Length: 233
Image 1 (cartoon, rainbow, N blue to C red):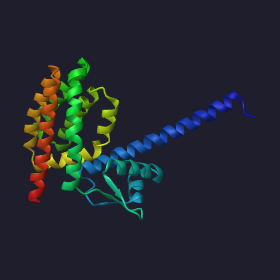
Image 2: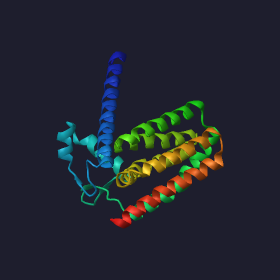
Image 3: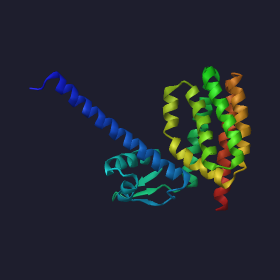
Image 4: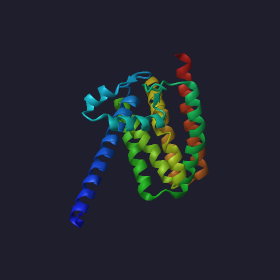
């Protein structure tokens, strides 16, 4: 028969093990995701669990969990034999992504203009200032991160948990394509900055319809840039 103290100790140990496993899974997921988005892992490249395990000094269990998450994000492909490869960009996939974004993100901007808090406005302002400074350095990763943060702040400002959840499912694959646009046309960031300023001002002024239309035009611009680049490849 266990004493209360012994039961409590066992529970604490189990909780610590679960937390450690969750932390490892998240760390592996973040590492692989960034490697895919930033080009450390190339499109079509095969992932080898043993190599990742040695590189990160973790067991294969959190690696497999991270792979499942990245497959769900649309960044990895797992074939019937269990082989894992990095997704390759395609016009068809980007078109499908665009069809989702062009409806959902303008809607998020619409509600953000109605529901944003003062704190969220200041956070958007901070990311805009960051983008302005970083874009001069041509650091693709930092530009990409600031851009993502700006968009995600608008999305969370919509205060619609269902909309936030649906858009978040596209986050990984959206970053994958967004980075390719920045790499192929660094000047596109200047156009994006101008778009961001206008969207931000519409949200500050609480003009939902204007914010919605500006966000739609911004996403359409991304789509046009990717199609232009793809047609030249």
